[in-house]
Length: 379
Ligand SMILES: [Zn+2]
Image 1: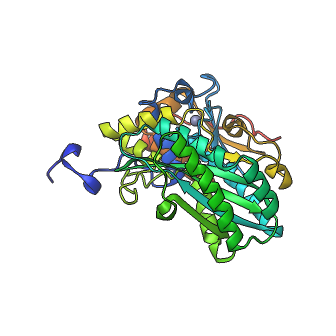
Image 2: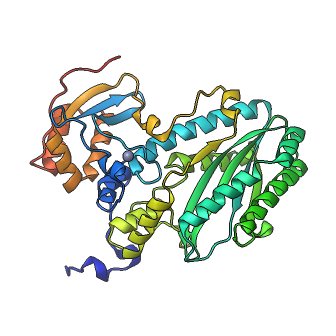
Image 3: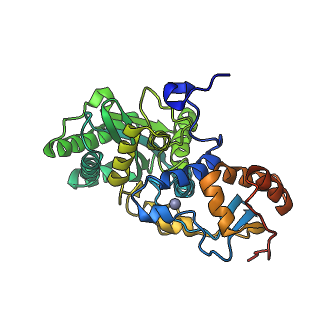
């Protein structure tokens, strides 16, 4: 067999950057690698043991297995692990609101995009998008039409991709109607939103988006279109509107990459991807992934909205401690074999005992250690 260095292989022939094949494994494997290139100190602390003495607990509960005793950053845009938790929580809330709305009324999904060219900064585009959405969902006409057409409000998500024309920043929103909204009403309602969206973008110096070439898309949800909703929710659940790719960084559609795909390419040593990831880290700082119109959550019986940091701090109910990984061993796995984290979680869910975990870990990393649980944590 001839050995070929990674640089000489191109495209899909290149060995994968990540070993894990499932999303959870990818998140845990990607986090320490991304931390090597991050400029965020908060993110850099995520996934490190809180106590050097107590180590990291491996727990199993009704919602699956997990790790305890770790710092978390709550940076849903740039931390793959926190993105998973935040995304799952938000997707759950959105499906509750949609189910509630479909019980008595109807729901439509509207997508609005902006025109962009390569070289425009993500930060500027995102700021423009936020202002345009605000313009689309404010003002007298918006309030009058909401009243007239029975729109109970919206939940909106921001999605970002990058392709040959640079950063593509767009909004998906679910519009809630108290009755069965007709196609005509939906069209005129969304057209008016799009007019305000366009005017704002133009006033800020952006090119006017094209109504019929992808600038605006609106569709009713329910019945056959349920699949659209399912796809939308899955997208959010997979990481605040972003999909972790297959792990080889090459799953982008039509050359458009989602931020996680850029992240995988960046940790794989692609200098352009590294530059883009850094820009994404900066551009996403302080941005909300999901926003609710006032009163919508309460109407559907949801409590106050939690911040990303609060969501990741939430304790799982009645977890059972399966084993403990000493802090030193944990750090060793992070550095040398982070794909093992996903393997451990899978083994625990398949019923592995602490001895099974110890044997597996010794096989992967002979110097790393697993210890028996000290107490069973039950609330
Ligand atoms: Zn984190």
